[in-house]
Every structure is written in C-alpha cells, then in structure tokens.
Amino acid sequence: MIPWLPPEPVFPPVTAALIEPNGLLAAGGDLSPERILAAYRQGIFPWYSDGEPILWWSPDPRMVLIPDEFVPKRSLAKVLRRGDYEVHLDTAFAAVVAACATAPRDGQAGTWITAEMQAAYRRLHELGHAHSVETWVGDKLVGGLYGIAIGRAFYGESMFSRAADASKIALAHLCVHLRRRGFGIIDCQMETAHLASLGARTIPRRDFVARLAALTADGDAPGRWPADAVRDACRRAA
Image 1 (cartoon, rainbow, N blue to C red):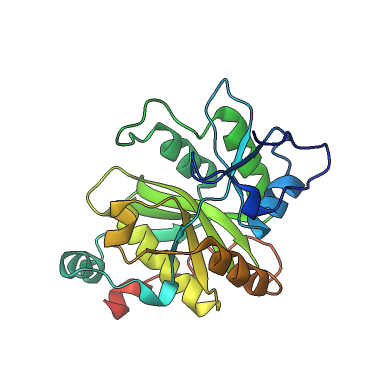
Image 2: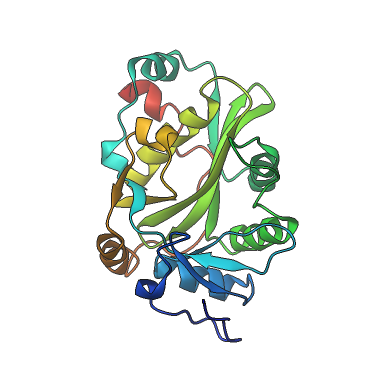
C-alpha cells in the first residue's frame, strides 16, 4: 500500500517507496508549483497516465548524467562541428512539451505527459523554474528537451526528435550550458539504454538524494535562460 497525500505539499520519506513497482511512493495531491518543486528537491517526481490519480515516484537506483561526463560519440561530434542547425533556450517551451507528449515511446501506448502535466510545467516555465533546449533547422523546430532547474541540479523530463540527432544536439548544448553555470547533475529519472549510450549512469538513491541536498541549497534565482546562451558552444568544443 502507498499513502494518499495530504493537501499540504509534503511527502513520505523516499525510503518508503515500493521495490515493485520500483520507486512508487505515493498517490494524490496536485500539480501545483509548490508541490512539484518540493518533490524534486527530495528526489521525487510525478508520473502517471490519463485516468489514474497522480502517482509520485523515487526509483532506486537513479539514472543521472553528470554534465562533465557527456562525451559525444564520433558521429555526433561531426554533426556538432558541422553546425547546420541552431540551438536556442527557452524560446518555444510549450511547443517542446507538446512535441514530447506526442513523440512515440518504445513499448508505451499513449503518453504520461497529460494535458494536466503540460499545463503544470508551462506554469513552472512562467515562474522561471522550467526550461527548454530547442534544436532548429531554419524556422523548424526539429528536436529538443525540457526540465526543471533547482539550485544547481537539473531534472530532465523528456526529449523528442524529428530529425537525426536533434535531441542529442539539444542534450549536448544543455550539458555545456549547465557546466558553465556550475550545475553538478542531470536527473534522468528512469534507466534506459539510450541514456546510457550518452554517458548517463545509475547511482544508489541515497547518494542521489544526498547530492540533491547540497546542489539545491544554492544557485541562481529562477528566471528565463538567455535564448542564445549556447550559440556555437558545441561547435567549438566538439
């Protein structure tokens, strides 16, 4: 059994999460900015489908990507050097979230990025907590990702690609941007082979939560990221 959350934005300790399904911690509550931010600070995130109550998770182990550990493979490095794309930050957040919601997922029917979730994260973007990284070819949005920044931790939510390597290009630029700002971790939430191929790895949940306590304690105030903050960043580094 898992508890039903009270009206206040509080959660059970993550050590109370179920082993099977891995990390299921609680149900109910809402998707207010206060509750979502409180959840992320503790290593908890919402994940559910239409017709279900809101479900809150904290799996063990946790997949993370350290920005310094992202090293593009040779084929991606060539794409980054070629630079026949542009990458912008926070110029099309709603479009990125909508594209992620409709992107096909291996072995999944439908999407967990419900209309309610999209509205919640758009609100977090308006408040300066949620950010998008967008890959453009001309005036077409061909890939990107979005997530939440708290202190010096970034919580990746989802990515999409409509052209070869478009989401990887966005991730490469995100890592450069986060390194420059002193971020120490990207939370990838669930373990996947795709993320592992990009340098992500799993760590015990207790280590993850301990890192969050330090990384979320300070950092820049919430706010929009400069749209062109990563211009040519990966082209020079690749």
